[in-house]
Length: 440
Image 1 (spheres, rainbow, N blue to C red):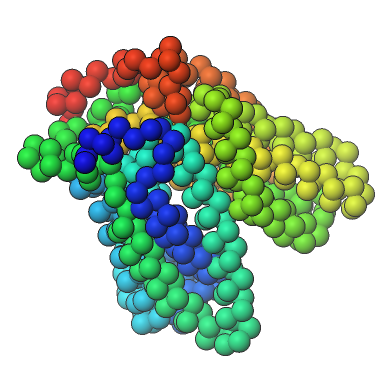
Image 2 (image 1 turned 30 degrees about the horizontal axis):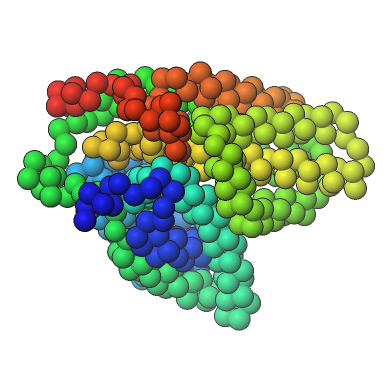
């Protein structure tokens, strides 16, 4: 049975895929119910001041980043599915307890535990994709999950708006419990997913113990570190829409705040409605993952150049609105082309025995970009409104160049969703796998 699953055709659907996607959608609704209002949400749920809530969320968020490597180690030891279920349970319990955490120590304790689960979750979810899918199925799951996350978060924001309209600020308490239910339901659905690892390697893992490999192996894998560095450059662009875009409109273009709302609406609608279609077209084209990810980075660069031109010309309000919406469409298409290919590339480039550690390292590129973006963008914007877009353009072009240069150094099963006949034979891995036993 395990051997049959391991031999699935590259694009075949995996057992429990619908449950996984439904769980992702439900949990995204929960996230959308509090992320847009995070400071206000926790202020009303706990009764603590905005200043206290802000400090606690910052400190616990940084603590969450520190444990991401531990999450990777846990995935390698216990499997992504088990760790994924544990994180869902922690998040459900945390939101159930938030309305009871009306003192600073209680809120800090609940926020810390919940932040550890939240920050580790992307690592575990990416690892789970590697466990349940092979070949082009990974690209399809990446695209489907991203679309569901956008749709779910949008739905969650609408739900909480309705709740607040009916119950006022007391609705935040109901929302917290609603989040707990959403995460619990998502965990129950993901529990139905049957991973390839569960079927084919759990017996071996149980007899041989955890793989004797550590982060020294990741740090010795220069092609994968290059892939992570390229993703950091692209990840800066992912932060632009939420951090730089509103500031740029308000300070450099002197536009109304409604333009920001319109941009977010267009981005969310395209991600939810066209994400799977665009990713499917890219996948069917047979493009190498490195090249489709590079194409996404080039589309980012085109959008950033468009912002520089717009910031130089500064036309009237109507022309600015049209230009911004066109730029956002180009940016979003770049996101939809890059994200599934880049995610599947990282999952497939990671050796199975230490996939958790590899993906924890890779996900740090997103976290570091998110942490750096606010200070970097505001500093550059204070000099010239076009300067941050110029830096982002160079970063995106650098990412595209790095991805194409890394193509020959990454394993063929990572570069190709379905290896062509000429490359069907196994390609030597970047790191000799026999060295795993000697890694720390």
